[in-house]
Image 1: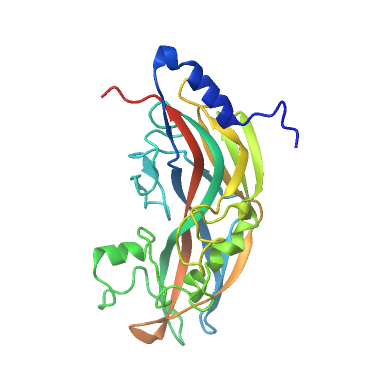
Image 2: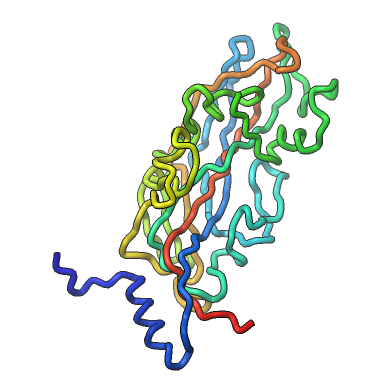
Length: 298
């Protein structure tokens, strides 16, 4: 194949930094990915407690702007009122939309990983009279630990591999897959957005694979660090002060997705049915590639 006239972004930056070695000295190249976490919301509607089923709806129009916050910024994961300060478990950028250390980053791949579900309890319903109790669960001894109470309000992750509290479709112990993640991937689009000006559309989110270790049964594709959506030509996330220095990866749900779910019995009282109000999924999106920068003077 004749490649004359074609040059990747990585090759362009290598030439640029090599040319500056006489005046600026040697530079550093890193392959550490950039990571950002946000959550997608499912509303639980039209519950039929007597027959123990309901519908989970991921509403059209949800927009997730990954890399729109930095460590220490306020971050909402889950329902309104559950915001917190972002930590380095949520992202590894220090300032929103910007690379670290005044560096240039060539994006050569993207991956998406599900960190886990958040469950918002709507209270218990007593069969057969269907009398609701206010959330969280009644104080008659079902839960008392503050972290468990927070988890039942969506303020903590609530992995439930045996589906004791959450509907089985959330963690899918019978399907042995992340069913709620797979249900929406094909209905979401993903694009790179620089400076709220330049946009690069990458197509459906389902193209982004796991990009990391995990259970093969639950992975989005093969759970290998090498299994990412590759962009060999590369996209430049520029250093602060230059064009294309502010980047978000925008995921948008283009149409609503409806999933039938099963309502569980209260494990503490089989006569009661647990009816969730909302379910959130934490997603971690990673950018893979090469970072160019000059070493610190410290």
